[in-house]
Image (cartoon, rainbow over all chains, first blue to last red; front, side):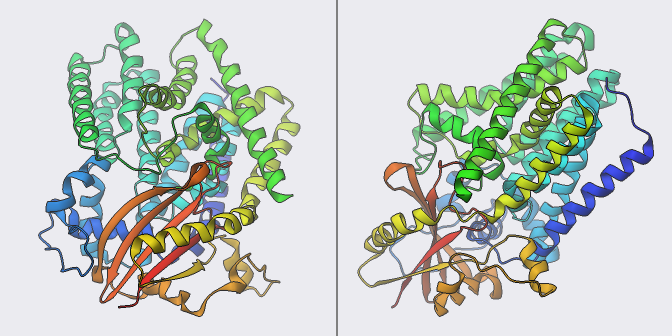
Length: 268
Length: 246
C-alpha cells in the first residue's frame, strides 16, 4: 500500500482533474450531434421495446425500421437499459444537444474521480493522478464523453465495479459485496461485453472464496447468466445478426493496433 | 512528419504499457489481497477481451467493434503510468515524463495525418455508395466541424485561427449537415444501418436517414486499423452525404 496523502493534496488533485476536464468538455457540450447520436436517439425514441411509436412511411425500398422489424437486431447489439434511460431522459429534458450530452459528461467526470482513487490506492497517488489526466486528455475519451452513446457508461460501470470489489477485498465488509451484484447487473444491462469482465471478477472471487467467504448464490447466478448469455449470442450469431462487414479483422496485427491506438480509437 | 511523430508516440505508450505489464507479473509471487491481487486483476481485465477475441478469431468469427475495447482505456493508463514509475523511479523525472506524455496526448488532436487516405479513398467510397444508392443520387462530400476543443477558445479570444485541412473546401450545401442540429430529431426516420468493407481493411459505416422528403446517407469511413485513427478522428472526420434528388 502506498503511503496516503494528506486530504488537502487529494482535493488539489481532484480540483485539477475537474478543472481540466471541464475546460476541454464544456465547449463541446452543444456540439452538433454526430450521426450515431442521431441514429441512437431515433432508436431510443422509436425502436425501444417500451415505445409505441409506429414507423413512418418510407419512399425507399428499405425494410421498415421499427421495434417490430428491427427490435431483435437492436437487442442483439446492445442491451435495452440505455435506450430506456434515454427514453425517459429525453421525455423530461428534451433531445437537444446539451440535454443529450449532459449525462455522458457527468458520468465521464465521475469515472475519472473513481479512476483517481483506484489508481492512488493500488499504484500511488501520482500514478492515479496522471492516469486520470491522461484518460481525460485522450482523444477517444474526449469524443466519447461528449456523445450520447454507450461508451462512457461502460467506463463508469467498470470503474465503479472495480472500486467496490477493491473495497470488499480490502475491508471484507459485506455491504460492498452486496453492492457488487447491483452494479454488475447494470453493467450487463448496458453492454454485453461486460460479461468478459464479470467472468474475470468471478474467477478472482472464486479463487479467494475461503478468505473472502462470498455468498455461493453469486457464483450460481453468474454461471447461469453466462450460460444464458452464450446461448443468446450463439442464437444471434446463427441468425446472422452480427453480420457486419466492417467489424474487426481476425488477426494478430489488429490486436496490436488496438493496444497501440487505444487512446485514439473513435470508431462507430 | 506529424504522422510519424504520433506513430512513435503511441507506439512508445504501448511499449511503456507492456513494461508495466511485466512489472506487475512479480506480484504473482505473493498473491496477497488486496494489492497484488488487484494489479493482476487489472491485467486480467485488460487482456481477457483480447483472449476472448482471439478465440473468436480462431473459430473464424468476425466479431465485434474496436469500440468494445474503449472501456479498457482507464486500465491502460493505470498500467502505463505504473510502468513509467517503475522505469523512472526518480520523482522529478517521472513527473517531467508524465507531463510530457499528457501534453503530447492533448495535442495529438492536432493531427492531420489522414490526408493521404482522403485522397486515396474518398472518391472510391463515394462512387461505390452512389452506385448502391441509385443512379439518381447526387454525392456531396463535406467535413464536419472539428471537435478539437480549444478551437472554441481560439475563436472566443481572437487568437490566430488554425485552418483545418478541409475547412476551406466546404461545399455551401454542407449546411444540410446541420439538419441534425436544427430540426427536431423526431422528424428523422432511420431506414438503414450497415457497414461496408473497402479494400485493405478500410471500412465504411453508414446510416441512412430520412427527413421529410430528403433521404440522406451519412457515412463514416476511414482506415479503421491504421494506428488507431479512424473515420471520426476529431480533426479528420469526413462524412459523405448522398442525396436523392427526387
